Structure formats: C-alpha cells, structure tokens
Image 1 (tube, chains in turn green, cyan):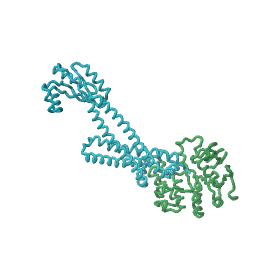
Image 2 (cartoon, one colour):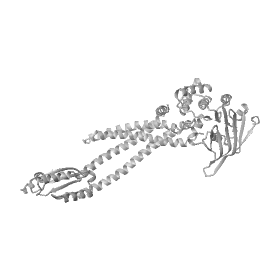
Image 3 (cartoon, one colour):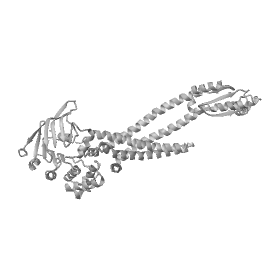
Image 4 (spheres, helix red, strand yellow):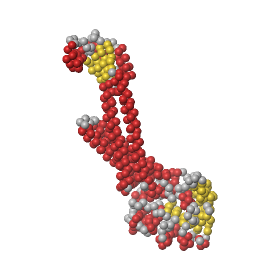
Length: 227
Length: 292
C-alpha cells in the first residue's frame, strides 16, 4: 500500500524564498495496482516518487510505502526500505564498466546477498526482461531499450512488491517505449504494484490504467480516455 | 560474504578506474616522499643537536689535592650514580699533565711539576640535562660534597646550544606542520576528485538499498591498497635516496632499526593516508549524492 496523507513539500530557492511543489496532497495506491502519475515537467511527479523512496521527506504530512512511514523512519532504515522496492529512471544510470549481468548482480551484492543467490536471481531477472542472451554485453553495446531492460532487471532482481518508475520511456523512441511499457505491464500482471510517472499521454491512452494527474500542486484522478 | 565482496570490489575498482587509482597513488607517493625526506632531515638534525648537547653538557669536577685514593674512588662512584649523569671519566694528576702537554706542546715544559694539575672527574650529562639550569643545579650539588675543590662547565656554550636548539625545534615543527598539511590536503583532494568521478556508483548502490557502511567499504579497500603501494614506492625512494646521499657524502648510515622504522613508518603512513582520505571523501559523497 502506498499513501500520501496531506503531504506538502517546498524547495528553497537561491534567494532564500521557498517554492511550494506539493501542497496538502493525498493519494493512495493499493497493492498490485497499476497507476500512472501524469503532469507536465516540473509539476512534482518526481518529487512524489522521491518521497516514496525517501530521498526526500515532506515538510508536512506523511508518506507511507509498505511498512515504512516518513514520520517514523530512522535514517539507518532507509536502505532496507529501498531493498523492498524497485526504482527505474529515464536516464538508465548503468555502470558503464560492467556487463549487463554485473550491473544486475552488483545491486544484489550491495544488499548483502550471497554469491550463489546473486547468480540465480540475476539470471532470473535478466530472463524476465528478455535479455539472457546479452548478459555479457556492456551498456555501450546495448540499445537504449535494452539498457532500460537491464535497469528494470536490476530493479526487480530483489523481488520488490512495488516498482516506482520515473519516466521510464522518456529517452526512448515510440516503438521501443511500447516494448518497455509491455514489459512493465507484464510485471504488473504477475502481481507487482506499479506507480509510473510519465508525461507521455500517448502511452497512457494506449495502455490505460488508473491515472492521477498533478495540477497546480494538487492530485486529481482522471479518465485516461479524456487525455 | 560481505567482506570478500568489498575486497573484490575494491580491487576491481582499482583495475577499472586506472587513472583515478594512478592519480591517488601518485598523490600519496609524492606526499609521503615529502614527509619521508622531512623525517630523515629532521632525524639527522636531531642527532646532530644531541651530539652538540652532549658535547656542551660536559662538566669537570676537580678533586681536592689532599683526598686519598679511596676517597677519590668513592667520589667518582658517587658522581656516576647521580641522576642525569650519562658517563664519567676519572683523570688522574698524571693524565691531566699528559693532556696539558698534548694541548700546550713545548710550552708545557715550563711547568716542571707534573702533579701541579689536580685530579678530576669529567662528567657528561644526558641530553635533557644539558641546559644551563640543570647543569648549574648539578654543579651546586657536586660543589657541596666532601673532597670536591671546584666544579666547572661552559655556561655560555650551553646557553647558545639551548637557544639554537629551540630555534631549530620551532622551525622544524613549523616546516613539519606545513609539509604534513600539504601532504594531507593533496591526498584528500585527489581522492575526493576520484570518488566524485564515481558518484554514479555511489548513487546506484544507495538506490538499491546498500547501507552507507557497505557503500564505503570498497572505497576503503581501494584507499588502503593505494596507500600501501604509494607508501612502498615512497619508502623505496626515500630509503634509496638517503643511502645514496650518505654514500656520496662519505657518512655512515643510521642503524638498521632506524632504516626499518623509516620504511615501515612510510608504508604505515601510506595506509593511514589512503584509509583516512577514502573514508572522509566517501562519507561526504555518500551523504551528499542525490538519487533522482
């Protein structure tokens, strides 16, 4: 379960003033649900995701994801929260000096998994995104879509219950974007909760699901068909 | 499994980021050569100062003429047991005359009586006592003893040596602090830049739920490795340079224990520098790196 309860967030400007990004925002995503978070650039979509993986804490209100609440979490618990979720960004952020396999395995080692388990989970994750045959390739040898698949494999290798995707198709052409979207939908159909921030309305219309729109710092639920 | 992974990753990072590893190792090497050269020069200066102090810390206790041989021996033995006395030398009438003849040559023949010079005990004090106040106190003590005629020492020379020693110590400490600060600054900045270049690695590790300690560990392994290599190169350079220099100057080298301390100290300092530099640089970036 993901909940934002009367959350407000503002950022400090260079002149010392504060610019509100979210004001008294509330939302709710149930387990195994798929939800789009849409809105123009700068509307606060990424801020909401940052609140959920606790890279940012709200000025007011409470952000809750799974068993973790922003008002109760200790700093040393944040890594454990992040192990229970998966995060995907539009800029792939793969380590360029490691193969696809090592990029995924690395994430598992970083959470203290043993070598044998790392191997089996990595191979399984790469198989789920359809990249087993390219596990030895380095990022520069992969296309944009393939790189994003490696990122998704890395995000799901730990078997998270939820995937937070911040513009995962933002850097991809429409055909590859559709492939990635199909992949994400496939993961959702297998039971994974999916919260995806995007400003690609075409994608939302083509693969409709519950849609929350961010407008003027507020969240409104809309019908994707109206986009 | 955690430690071996960190070690593996640290070693692999060393191989992957060759330029960064080279830059950090070079910085450590240069810094340690600076420190090493300074340490050697400082040590030799200290040795020279000690030698000068020992020479200046010389006192002569003249024995009364009427003291018997037994009394002279007893006095000599008592002087030897005084705190601060490093060594003593008994000089009889005859030896005093011999020294006199040696120093004055033909003119010494003017004095026909070989026993006109009193017997004495020459006293060398330990370096910490070689200052005007301690020597004066020691001299007062000896002066009050039976069978002691007079106690003499070169107060002016002692004062000069003490003053010069203070200047050398002050200048040495100031230079040492500058060298050390420069070295630490150089190493810290180089390591900081090399870790900054790998903030993507830190970001990714944080994103997937690695604890701060886990993120830091491979950097520490890498820092220690760089420090060890830098320390070994610096130790070899300073040690080789020192031996070559002494050979050229026709001077004896310090004993093996001192040379081993130099080599071990530089390698140890390299490890410490690498570890501390990586620890603080990694800690800073782990805290400041943004995930979005």
